[in-house]
Length: 365
Image (cartoon, rainbow, N blue to C red; front, side, top):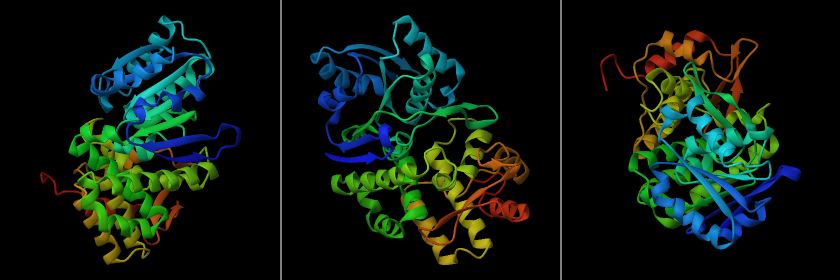
């Protein structure tokens, strides 16, 4: 097991990464205020891992109530969130109850938002079971639901008490979901660590083969990079915005197609290629650097072109992005591999040209 810490003073918390951690109640018990937990999961993860998590806690005399939600991004909305509140109220959960989110990014985001809101805030623990959640969404305290006009536009910052990433759960992850997680791992190399990006170029096949050593290192390095950024800028007033490389374009793809048609990591990959193309057009990124990014995403099994929504539709959807400030959209772009910047000084015609260059042809695939 490897342990990292998100350094947030009195609200600091550990990230434990290892194999078989679901069966380690000793890692969870120190973070409970009382011996009652509410576990939120979904109808795919629950049958696989809910009992594995709960068995050890029951042996330690922890009372457990649980809820299985429907799986998928399409259910990350008010109605599903209210089901969590219904369960917490029905089971008489108190302010000292801890909510455990067992699942991928959707479960973690909704469980965290419910915990941030219920009785004005209760403790919660992230137990991510997808690669994307283990390297990204479970760390940092961003919680949210989607709105038809924009992804993750309604939410709160609410840090977990613990992140418990059991790499054994990745064995049951569909290949498409695994590739979606690789998009976020590649993102870390692009924004902060060119050496890590080069390492990924050498080891992407080992990662897709679930080689334990490569997988453990990629998860640990990703979490380390994110933890450092979150510690420096918890509520995204500056540097943390770099973590959104590809997300402005990618969220437009997810919203425009309808939530769940593309996975989040797929949108991030195509969106990152749009950001790389825009960076190239600004003279910040060379042709070979763009080609390297494209090759790595392709080798990871990810799309490198977005759907043909049309430039006006992309721009309209992007206008709802959380990085809009004083009516002006800020972009996360690249001044080189490992060197991301946030800028609002971008001509909208160049943005449209980058989108057009990185979309499939109308009617194409």
